[in-house]
Length: 110
Length: 114
Image (cartoon, rainbow over all chains, first blue to last red; front, side, top):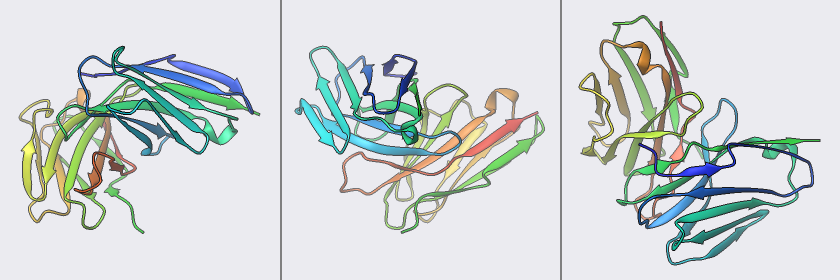
C-alpha cells in the first residue's frame, strides 16, 4: 500500500518557471522526504523535513510541511531542463521503511 | 565514493524460473532495504535488514520471495518460480545508522518475466 499521494500526477513547464508539487499522506509521521528519479535511474534523496519543522530550504528547493493537514509541498525555483524527472514524497512511520507516493512527473522544456 | 550497486541491471526470466538479484550497499551502512517498483508507480517496501538480521519482511508479496544478508553487507533477493506479475524494477537502498532515515538507492534491477 502507498501512503502518499502526489499532486499533480504530471506537470509541464518552461525553463525558468517555478514548479510546485504537493503530497498528502494518511497517518502520523516522524519525517517526510522528497526523492527524484530520472528515467531509468535510481532514486536520489533531495530533502528531509522532520515532523516538528514547517519549512526547509536546500538550494533551489523549498519544502513545507503541514502536519495538521497531513500535506507537504515541494517548490523548485527557476527550473532547468535537468530538473525533468519524477518526484516522490516518502514518509517514515516506523523508523525503518519508507512509504512512497505514486509520484509527480515533471517535464521542463527549454 | 562508491554508491549502492546492484546486479544484474536487467534480467529476463521465463515464467517459472528462479532469479537472484544482488545488492552491494555503501560500505559501513548497517541498514539495507529492498523495494519493488512497478511501472508508473512509486517504490513499495519489501524487506529490511539491520546488519545480518532481517527485522521486517512484511512487504514480501509471497513465500516465493526470499532475501538474505548473511554477513551484514551484500544482500540477495531471490524470487522462486517467477510469475509475470513479478515484472518490476527491484531497488535496493542502504542507510547509515546515525543519519536518520535518509536512504541511498542503487540503480535497480529491471526484471521482466515472459
